[in-house]
Image 1: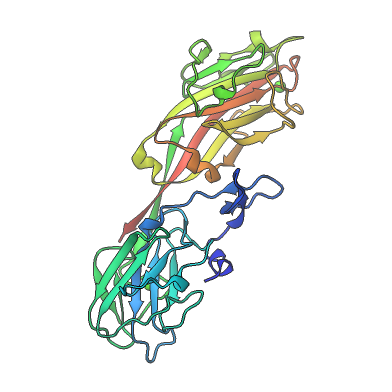
Image 2: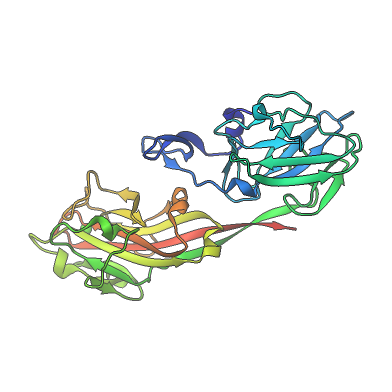
Length: 373
Ligand SMILES: [Ca+2]
Ligand SMILES: [Ca+2]
């Protein structure tokens, strides 16, 4: 099958060049910005989900259906199906850049012809074997089936499960009878009140402060407990949000406009596997650049290359009751790690004579799990 056909099945994603090797990769569309790689799932989770050996009255034709039970897309490029014959049908390899949506299906015709979307062999109505191999020729899944009835398919119920049944109404490209559902839950990974380390730099420091590498911030100022904001207020507005007052370091002629903030948080390995969405909730008077484990993930109200004494582009007034913005960072879930993580914020005031400065942050995740009904 060609990648255009597959691309339609992965809504809101596109194909683009990413990374230092400029390899083609499924990407999250980023108009006018650097492409961001969509995290892939492990293709070894893909299952041979349904098959129809003998199509007489049905328009579907004989087919093999694959199912991705994961919550992220997988790349099927280079994978192949066989009927158990010794010779590998090289011409039946799935074309590069063939993507399968999270919780999605792909159907291959099994009518003996080869080419995109076809497996190059027929399924025997007397029974046989279907094998799925990854691009490195490792067997990913195998089913052994018995005698088949015309127009009755056989497959897993529910999708991807171990139990196999006959289906009088075949469902190529759709859920098998038996039902399953995706259950999502919200989880706060990092609370606004989370403990932080803060530095108003007086010169250049190592970029390692942005996370992803070992870094000693024990000499930085400590911001502990609720409400959790870092900033200062010389008028009225932000007092109820500020835990660490940095007015002494940032307010007044000649003081620095930049404030570095490191927020450690932990992600359990079992949680990490289920994270399908990530949101940064932020208040920023007046601008910031955010890093997740050393990778820049978003910036606001700042242009240029961040330096130890950068300032925001303009003055902005933050909300007090609600956050200023909930920023979708789902494209960066692959940068989260099991265990210790660092969210690092380069906060910036518009000027050191500005009457206020504020940064508050929280990180929320969406967990997705495929459940049988
Ligand atoms: Ca099906
Ligand atoms: Ca300000």
